[in-house]
Amino acid sequence: MPNIIKDRAIVADDYHLIAEVASFPSSDILVNFEIWQQQREQVLAHPYKKGVVLKPDQHPELIADDIGCFDLIAIAFPAFADGRGYSYAVLLRNRLGFTGELRAVGDVFKDNLFYLQRCGFNSFAVRADKDIDVALQGLNDFSVSYQASIDESLPLYRRRLVTA
Image (cartoon, rainbow, N blue to C red; front, side, top):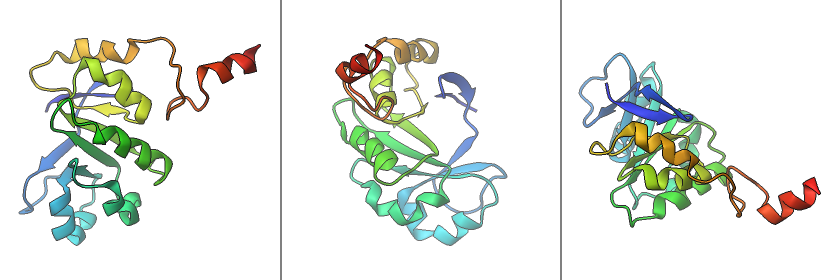
């Protein structure tokens, strides 16, 4: 079972990625959006935790009515330069009210963890060729953020006014 970073700690990934629905393992499952669309009732009947993976061209609005069905939503980052997942995370947290585990998967490594966290991700499947211990340190790359985001509702200048 691979390790992931979840809530600032390295833990074993409890979810099994399901490529096709034949039978589900007796464990938490993560399905791609296509399987969710085609086999929704079978996935919902599974007695363990459920998650869905969204690709960059699969907007979170596609699952808006089903948000409550998922314990985990994973957003795929196929390439470092594709930033749609950052926007999707903010949308899921702010507009759609998702409070469960939000995981970044794909081209995920130390240099982008801090920014992913700011957008609402709390779980990270680090790229296989990267050291997960080194990547974990990326969550602490900066001690202060100037802008408001999911993790800090006020920009720095407003926080300074409150403490002054």
